[in-house]
Length: 284
Image 1 (cartoon, rainbow, N blue to C red):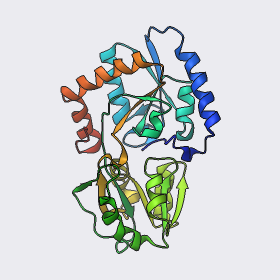
Image 2 (image 1 turned 135 degrees about the horizontal axis):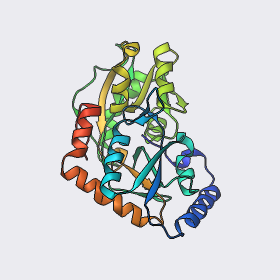
Image 3 (image 1 turned 90 degrees about the horizontal axis):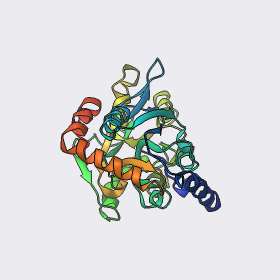
């Protein structure tokens, strides 16, 4: 998922530059990194969610708790709307962003990333059993820039022509839907959860999103009429994988988390948490 500081976010270049300058002023101060603040959406289950009592939990918060213990840093979670997450990081509101954020070349221009801790496929979900072909269990892995995608999307384009597709605004999947489904009506939402609510009520025909996120919603009784449809698309077409985001000047903090993620991947912690929350291994 993930914020795209795609310039699909409509942020003027000047605003991006200003946020970097402001962020730089925070990072220029000497830091011992005894405590940090981490921003997450708290509304992208099972990656991150807010429990009834207000606690933010899920795959990423539990992984973060493990990483912070390894680094011996006190970590505080805070929730932040998706649209302002990168700008808030560079403005010094928090030190790390964690929200199923996929590494992309555009985002790397304005923030640093840790090494990836997950890599997940995406797929359509729909209520109409005859709208798309039956869901496939296997993942079609497509490299970035590969022409293989044309053959994969061709039958999807035909089936969804004139239909309404819901997509979370600014996600790594937004540009893909805009590019390949020009003959469909694309409706953007502030959250993927809002798109699924409209799908359930019949206001839109399909939603395209991360398989792990969609699967969490489909497991709820209220969404039993919704199902996966068409192929599951994975690979570097979506970027290098999901990672933590940092201000560009905080290279020392980035290095600390890189070492912790490597250790958590090596000793099986990431895989264990992946199986717990996703029921599948999403380790990169």
